Image (cartoon, rainbow, N blue to C red):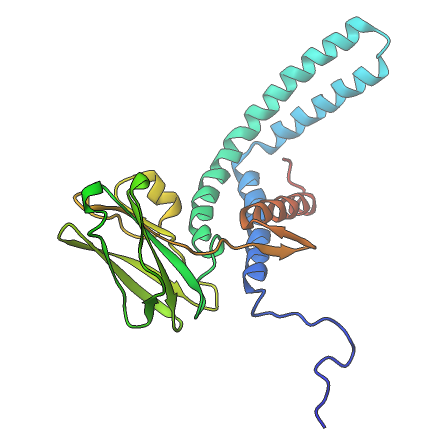
Length: 268
């Protein structure tokens, strides 16, 4: 007689399915700790402590002398000056921590921002060409593991051609688009796990490539300006809500940072 898989009646936790959530929570906590440690060693802790104490004193003066307008007005002026002094002391350390965090987020978005495709899942490949005259000549070349499931759709207004494709099994595949005598390629990722995803490959557009593309640029003389794969965006379920990963990352990092700040006695 087979034993019940969950005799106690408790809900089971699927670790494989929740790998992105667990990794993201772990990374957020570590980053929260690193941020406060970096702030500790790049800031003048004594000066920040004095600035915060002065602000508290001026706020207390407002409460104690609220019936004396001249005293209250002077206290408000000192609060404004003290706030400016505090922000000046805190700005440089925050900037030092923010720059590497920004680049980290760009790289993490390759893994957490999009979900890889699954076998038998239909998806779109969109190519934008530079010359409208080549739009009808653009042809999609697929590996044996991928197949087209519908005729190409041409969008002359946007200089785009769209193909609907389906994958047979997991793997990393190269799809090729031939246009104007040249052939360009784009990677397609089909996987059930966490994978590095590049949703688009671009020609030029350096900063756009830095933030949204994880592949080398198309050649400057390429007839194709961009190739995009219709990966589904990742939504992470946590605490009874659905989160964009960046929002969840910042929320957990900030909470962890404030906890570590208190535990380590760091002035922020």
